[in-house]
Structures are given as C-alpha cells and as structure tokens.
Image (cartoon, rainbow, N blue to C red; front, side, top):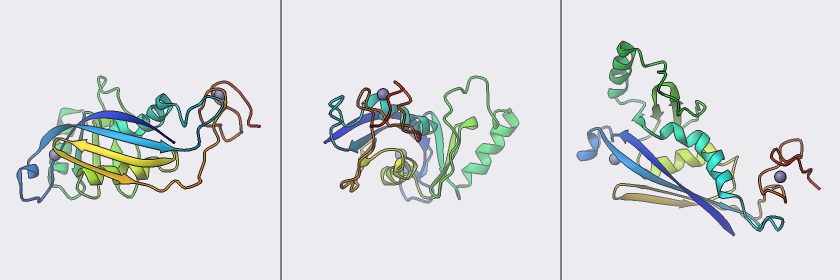
Length: 189
Ligand SMILES: [Zn+2]
Ligand SMILES: [Zn+2]
C-alpha cells in the first residue's frame, strides 16, 4: 500500500533561453506530492506516518520554499548574488530562519543562507521531480513523485518492488542504525 503527503512550495524561477514568457523571472506556488510504498506495518496499521514523511522530506525541501531557483549558467545568478553581497544578505540575515541543511547533488546545490537553489538543468516540473527523487531516494521508499506548478504538472513512478524499510511496530518510524527506535526506544526484534 502507499502513504502520501503534499507540500506547498513558494518559489521564483525562470527558464533561461526558453522562447516563451517563462524566460522572464516569475513565481509559483508549487505542490509537491511524495508517495511512499511498503507493507502495512501491522503494529501501527500504517505504511509510514505521513508526519514522518513530512519531517524527513521537508528538512531538504524547505530550501526550495521562498527561494530563488536558477540554472547554473543563468547570467542572472552572478547578478543576483552581487546585489545580495552589496546588501549584506548573501551570507544570511537574522530574519532568514527557515533554512534546511545545505545540500549538493549532481542536479542541484542549495544555499539556504540566501534562499537560493542552483540547478544543473532548467527547473521545470519534470526537473523538480528529478531533483527531489535524487535527494530522498535513500531516505524513503518513494513510489511516485508528482509536482504541480501553475498549469504545468508532471509525475513519475518508481519501482519499489519487494524493498521494505524496518519500521518500529509502536510508532511506525524508521529504526536507527543501532536497531533502536529513536522515538520510543523500542528495539528491533
Ligand atoms: Zn514557472
Ligand atoms: Zn517507536
């Protein structure tokens, strides 16, 4: 079965060199849905607690929220960074508190201190799905990711197969590497 949860992400971006309106800087409310597949954990009668999916995913995904997302070769990137430098907000601001841990993958690099994500490819709905899967594939049994942004949407299915994650029978979350539930202290049987 599947458990899924949805995130709202406010962001600005543009499609550099795209022949259409989207080549101009603009913003969206993006809706990201992550579906996790596994057996139903009979202790809690859940595949996975949705608030736990939210916690694991949001830690990284919040770097995209209220952020500017630009492709690495976009000339707006050095221009924006230059303005941020002059304004003294390039390396953080006291009011910028919604920062997740900075990440760097082959597809994207997050600079949470200045609410910027630099991508290798254009950040279309398809591009966002590739980035999110790459960030979370080792943390969750992802079966599908869907992303809506304005009138655009994309979805991708992933084969989970018989892969299962060891979850605590008391609270449904993943056991730690020591085989102990980090929430209730239950030990893996
Ligand atoms: Zn757009
Ligand atoms: Zn537990």
